[in-house]
Image (tube, one colour):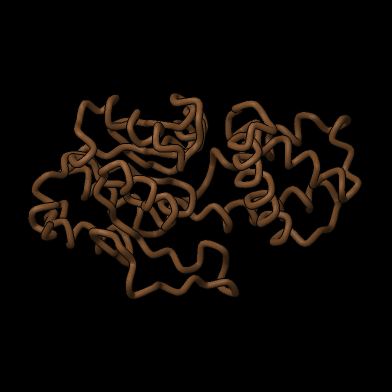
Length: 247
């Protein structure tokens, strides 16, 4: 199917959030550094942030998918790993419950990429825009309020009780929006997410976020990505989707 034919079907854009819409790593490292200063503790906060994300969040979701953990929110998975990491650096989590709880909610305060707010608003002028994230609803709602991300709908894996890339997450999103799968496009910076959405009939738009894991770990884009649209940022995506600029 041609790009024009595919575009003519699309009524809603569903967005992955962590890494696609928001720069989670920079935000988390900055808050960890502040936490370390306030608590007078030293650590490699970049490594801490990466482990919190990869071992705690992504690793936690794998444990849920394997049946080793019951389904739980992203907040719960983050808190589980945060406790482990803080205890590794001998921070007393039991005596500092309020500080740990506040630090865990940094994921509610993630900063958007520079193009996200205006780009999302431009796309919203032409399509329904929704989250489709493994983050829980309260997290996504607080983040939207904090970072001025104006969603039409907030959809989460929490509603389904299973994490992406479980196909039911995408099918359930289509049902809740009242559209057929081919009337929805997933926008994401992660190939596995897009491939899973594609498998259930979604359109796909890959947004390249090369520094999601930092300048020293820049991602390289493959020229053969099997997606409908490939964009450098949300402004570029709007151009590809023939959305006029917002005055």
